[in-house]
Length: 299
Length: 313
Image 1 (cartoon, rainbow over the protein chains, first blue to last red):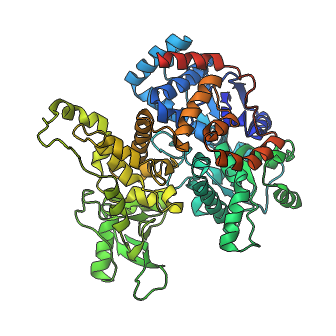
Image 2: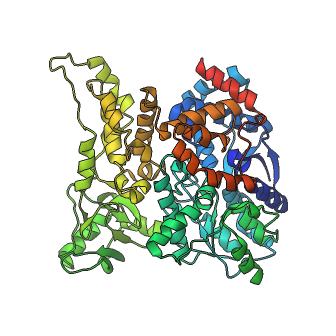
Image 3: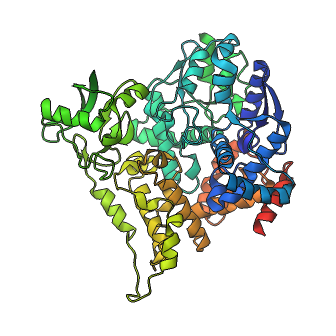
């Protein structure tokens, strides 16, 4: 099993612990990766708002680079998966688009993309390519007695026409992984909704309200922690939780706390494989994960 | 086969809050949720209240939440839902006040539609009809004219859930429909009004509206087109617009997004907001989560600069 690893901007920027924990986990899984070290941003849907063809060009370059290596791409970011994966499906399906983009891509980079690459998130690779039974066999420290709230976010599910791994109305892959690691998956309504991160700077109050909704929902349903396949959701829910807690206390009373650790998917997998929270970079989180780690150690 | 439907009931004259009630009904492969509801109303409980009319996905009156997702009851198969979810739970649309059972108050919905001047405005009564332009309008509309006003997108909107004043996906898709009409003459004015608080920049791009629309109107994609139109028309000062322009600038320079540089460039015109971000920025810095804002760019940036340069040509 070998992939071209596309880290995305967040794993190499504001969430370096995502890259760190991914490295630990894929090595233990025995998945071979070739890191795309000179990768570019997928555009995160924002560049596409300004100029759709520019976003296609950036993603076609990534895809063409993997095609030269004859490898499928592994992503670790839900947003990258949605945008890069969506661009891939459009370029594969629409020949006129591919020709138009290739013409420009070849001029500026010498590359062309022929549509021969698949883009897969680590979450999908774990469930399908690697398999849950094989994953279970590597669990040395099952997360018994721990309740984990899966948080999918938007782009790994929607639009279903380009995401398409899970049924967007009723996704199950995170729940399957959580169970394979020995933990209990929490059922709650907010698991497929927006984390608020995309509008944090322009619409702060709106974003903070969303964080409060998601985290208090997961908490009310018994979650000890939330796990997400998207570092942007991680940033949304982790960075803003302190401000969301103030909002929460206005509603639920001053003694009501959120204190919800937000884990990247490979961090949760890594904990069940016996890696320490330091090895998985959890000290970088703004919400202290110590109570969760103590609960795991006690079980 | 007998099938169980769990239906959310609410009668404002008798109930303090909504409550679920189970019904069983005979259903076959051809039974839609609407047919099942009509059967319950006719045979078991005449008080069950819902809107419906055409039974053919045209009138848009029977939208409701079926297993938590906004769907036209007339276009949703009972067996299909059982296959997909293993249950059938029905409730009214969200983000709108409930009048009774599945009937919601659409008054706020219509008010917001009216707010975008949803018709062609021309100050030249005898202007020649731009026949040639009207022939190609279909390409520019991107299906925005297919809306049946069912309310699915508004009910599913994640932004409206926390920001009820947001004008919402249906009204914005409608606005776009008239922005590209060659007969319309108030495009700039309409765009201007959408820059206000709770206009186009309230959309979080959660893609729910695209997913639930029964007519593939893709409201979010129309909102994105309105944003692009806004920037091209010179409405570049809002933080939302700066999010796009400065994002493109940073990636065009460095090849990647620099999470320290972008917020600075976005908020440099709004010092109060910039200062508010300082405590978070400090916390990120001390945990090694703030990339250097003006260091040497990462590998690959030369290729990305070449792509941007080619695009500018």
